[in-house]
Image (cartoon, rainbow, N blue to C red; front, top):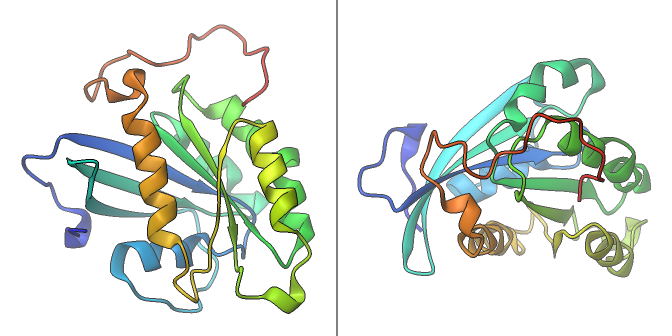
Length: 205
């Protein structure tokens, strides 16, 4: 996969997709993004506000530029990040398999926010169970995560940013699904595929 350092403009890409990472503080969103974008891993401090990285990937014969937004999980930053849901074709909901409360937050907080702030009607959602390397401290089984994802119409992948397990796979599967969704391939700036501005009555997924 080809990376463009600094998030600079990339010529001759077939598509540009916006991806948003959400989830509680400390679940490893920033580590996943760092691993995917640079191949490295660090024990990172919690994100303040929003971080951003860009990477070009070749998926299914298409050259795709991903602009990936890493949001802060702390409640005090949540009002700052709501606007970053706008225009996201893919949303990655991350939890820590060793902290059951972060899994519970997916339904209690993050899927509600997707429904409230998301603007792309058919955006692809993926549940990522991170820190699978912490097997002895696991509180959320793979089956629980998979069942939750299926119930809410989301893709599902277990990853370890620290162990570099299935991180690239997660983003590649997400991009594949976006490429398979015609409404998400509309040109940048088009309103095609956006939700109406009527009050939302259905669930987020």
